[in-house]
Amino acid sequence: MLSEFKEFVKQNELFGSSDKILLAISGGVDSMVLFDLFKKLKLNFAAVHCNFKLRDEESDGDEMFVKQYVQDAGVQLFVKSFDTLDYAKVNGISVEMAARELRYNYFEKLSTEHEFDYIATAHHQDDLIETFFLNLIRKTGIKGLTGIKPKSGKLIRPLLFAGREMILKYVVDENIPYREDSSNSSIVHKRNFLRHSILPLFENLNPSFRNNIAESIQNLKEAEEVYQNSIEKEKKGIIRLENNNPVVQIEELIKSSFPKILLFEILSDYNFNSAVISEIFQGISEESGKQYFSSSHRVVRDRGKLIITENRDKSEAVFYIEEGDMELFSPVNIEISLFDALNFKIPHLNKYACFDYKKLEFPLIIKKWHQGEYFKPLGMDGFKKVSDFFIDEKFSIPEKENTWILYSGNKIAWIIGYRLDDRFKITRETKRIYQLKLL
Image (cartoon, rainbow, N blue to C red):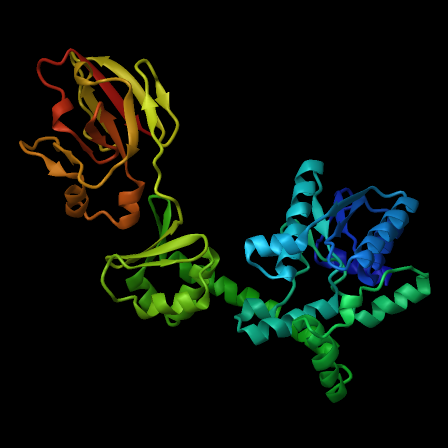
């Protein structure tokens, strides 16, 4: 098993000999085997154990067992206890999901604080197969059918090559102690029901079932690489970046041979589920302004485009430019200069704003616009609603929300990046010019 372990690590480029690894150890048979393999290879690693307080004395017994075993092995150990039931209740999630979030958040915290290169878990081949079937039941694409990956960012799973039988044989041969989790025998949970009631039926049909499924998953992984390469090529002709937001060109999307699948692959990266993506696709030719939301992002249908933006609360933040400031870094990066009006040439670009210095009231204020506000666009005699200006200039909803306004006192001086207010313009009487350059 040790030689197969080394070969699997090498083939999948999981880690190097000098890398520092954090190994998750529960005390169960899988993690105890992985711990033993790490020890035999004299890897640079520490261990971490989580007590989720879900099985009363049994959970505490696991913790004591792990502490003693790891201490005797001379390996550094981190231990953390969680009130998992309370966390699940507060966050409105399942106990299983709560344990997962708590576990991986803690792993990531340790990884950052102690500079671990990788986090290793003891998922094995049977976990891979079970995940395949669970994803199949839930409805999934080709990515979901590839199951658990050996390496995902900092997370590595060096035991994926080994099935349950190989692991149990190694435990006996090497005389490795372990703790049995009583909840593993329960068929209440979906994974356990699949493990104990469904998969054995497939083995009755074909004793080589597990190996065949594992090989099929590997074939799907290779097929997924081809699929993803094709998708990425298609994306390049459809997605553009506008104002730092990804924008889907609807006309180009529709020209594709598989527009719905392509839209799914684009939007799933932004946490949109298949139901919402189907709704977006069905309404792709509807009027502008319709919005769709995921947990993290929003899609706005706007004149032949699907604009993808992050979900943000409407900002009430206020920023100030004091007299004498030379640069502003937030919310936009602005370079500030003061010039003598004599021989000054006004740059005719939207990123520049030039004012009669004497007309300004400091501190200048930068904030978001509000409904009902007016300004006097440069070159116009009368006033205009900011909202009407946005309509005339064909601003999308995200563009309106992301536009900042410069105020002098309670008057709009500049719709930043777009239009100056006529009341602050340079005239023949101007002596000094106050210039803002949007970087």
